Image (cartoon, rainbow, N blue to C red; front, side):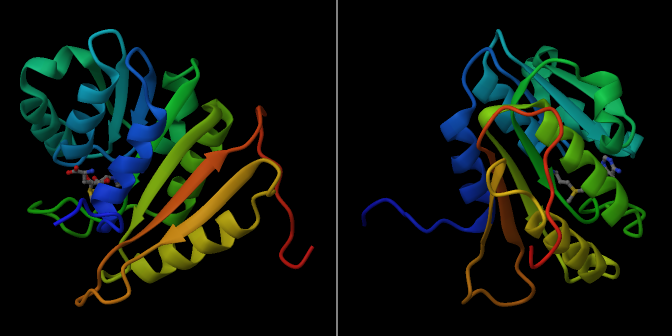
Length: 201
Ligand SMILES: C[S@@+](CC[C@H](N)C(=O)[O-])C[C@H]1O[C@@H](n2cnc3c(N)ncnc32)[C@H](O)[C@@H]1O
């Protein structure tokens, strides 16, 4: 069979990121979790690049460090909210990945990403992003609190000025049992602070 074009959400996020991230780049994993995306990004940026990975759970950072193995030197793991990204990252980034919700297999599944910090982090990272850089956000809405985060995010991305950012939603419509969907943001021009417009403007 020919290669898949319409990937599931997680491989599609990786594919979009791969189009824009080059060896030597700095990138952000906003939700390190078990480190799957951190490892993917560490492979992509190569020996000369760097990944800055955030998580508010020490348990997640330990899992990420183990998962990185010999590539651990390519990543800085930060035990803080992604909303504080500007305290840790001053250089331009070419990509950032968010994978929202709770840490799979965690002892405490009530620790979830929240609308205010997720939106603050995306807003800050849009400023750090290079022109043509990509942010991917994998959104799960099946857990408690998930639908509030989904709605707040959709409201926020809909207000981003089209001249500054192209925002898309991608999802498989024929997948069962609360599949995630993907939001992807591409930076269209250089800016430090993204412009927003009111709905209907
Ligand atoms: C779905 S998991 C991420 C999965 C991960 N990408 C992987 O490859 O395993 C979501 C993670 O976001 C973390 N998280 C929640 N709020 C956060 C915040 N404000 N800043 C950074 N990480 C946060 C959770 O602790 C959890 O580990």
